[in-house]
Image (tube, rainbow, N blue to C red; front, side, top):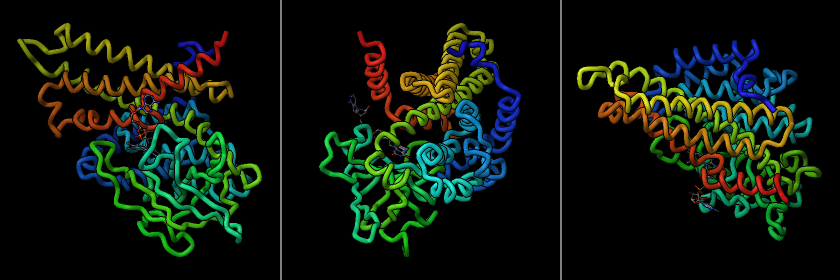
Length: 403
Ligand SMILES: Cc1cc2nc3c(=O)[nH]c(=O)nc-3n(C[C@H](O)[C@H](O)[C@H](O)COP(=O)(O)OP(=O)(O)OC[C@H]3O[C@@H](n4cnc5c(N)ncnc54)[C@H](O)[C@@H]3O)c2cc1C
């Protein structure tokens, strides 16, 4: 098992990449996030620079044009991006889950077709499980696909909360393919649905897939969250993830595998957001005076800083441990759940403590913490709520330590 010391040891490559991304966050993301957040505008220039830096292909193998890096390194990159603004990491998050699904389960033809363009960011991916009536209870999905005589699958139903739902050119969609299957998860398939990026009403070969106007949110702005309405949309049998023979009705386990990875990813976002809140709190506490001295000299404020720093460090270690276990091919369901639970709650805690330290100014849109405070709650919800993480951890603990 990795020790705390080894978890904090970075390879030369990891150190160089983290420094590069941190500098990118300091120079390009942090100074501009306020504008894009307040306008709820997609940060196109930042995304263009991320393409140039190769950040869309971090985990894609070199043979397909990516960097071929592991999850541990990816998690460090996500932490740095999220320290800048979690909406930026949201743009790569679902893309990264899509590339993981292709690398792990895709056929050679599927990898060849998508990964090279995904590595450059020319083609970006979304990931879609949730529906208007469900999120946690994935087995209750209603969106269905039926095989037509011509070999295509026709999809009908509505998906909800699809991050990057408008701009993605590719969506990994979980659909019901065998309505009679018991248990239900045995009748679900992941279909790789192509669409026109940035187009609300798809036409031609992608007709039957519409993207309603993006959902207005309290935070996590700039990156769109949308519904996807499938109404007679057709996709070839070759779009079954892993091929029709191997992949039909295997979608639930494929998606759950990807979610485990997604949890490490959300944990890394929690660490980055909390780290930024801590930095802002440390600075403001030394600048602001009350009762004749910097508020940092009041013990109550020092205790807040101490609790924040301790939680950030613990969240980082849990996240790195979960990432390294997954990289080593070890079972990491409990660890990924713990990392996601603890780091997302740490994000919320640090955002609130930082806001309190800022007093009235924390409530002003002039200050970065106001945005962070609105962004933090998303991490408690996405990739499984805190309640669901506790259920997963509890259930898996009892399986692992069964007497
Ligand atoms: C901004 C944003 C982006 C998102 N992006 C995506 C995306 O890209 N792709 C995607 O597929 N989904 C996405 N989601 C959806 C997200 O995954 C779901 O919102 C989440 O899984 C929770 O589902 P729900 O909202 O339906 O809540 P529900 O499942 O209805 O849960 C409501 C409440 O009940 C609790 N609860 C539910 N079941 C239990 C139980 N058994 N025991 C105890 N408590 C329980 C929950 O913890 C929660 O507190 C996104 C959501 C948001 C807000």
